[in-house]
Length: 254
View (cartoon, one colour):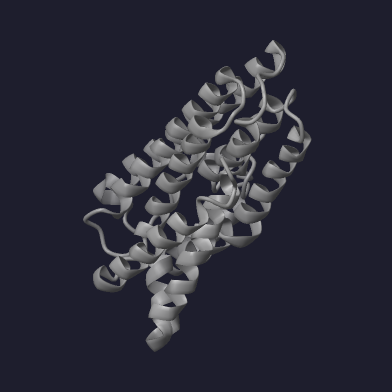
């Protein structure tokens, strides 16, 4: 399957998503769209590329389970709720330019779907790695999946309580990292170069965790989340920043 085939469908899908958010004024659906699109594109590569059946089965299951879970989780946060604070702030900042600002933003998200599905394309043209690398890669995915799922559930339980409005979650994994969900998201990308050990060009997949770290730490993840947390929780979050590791889980400074 050619790398270029998905580009037109992605542009169409995200253009439709942009049109819908212009009507609903809830741009948070872009995250749901990104997660499901990445999972489906990775699964498509696994189905239509010409690598060994075993590695394509492994890749398809990983992308389906990882991004499927993420998509459902994000949907539960968006459906029936007001626009997330960071997107509402972005809309206020853009003012009359908001439709065009979000149009560019949606198309950028479409390009990131294509980028984040690249490991699936590489792996789906290769072969199964030696057993130790296969076991280690799958173990990393399992640990990361469980960790991110646990972090998301702990935060959801905290937010559901009536006494936590305006407060910061310091329970469970959130006591040791301000962004444990992002940490486990990053961790899972180390599985792909291990799974590509016997695949030509697979060494390039070591760039995947590097790029994801840059995205999460400097571009789309932590910076926007921290700014919104400071806007909504103020001094409580500033104290949390002093006490808790930003990314890698570590002992609290209390």
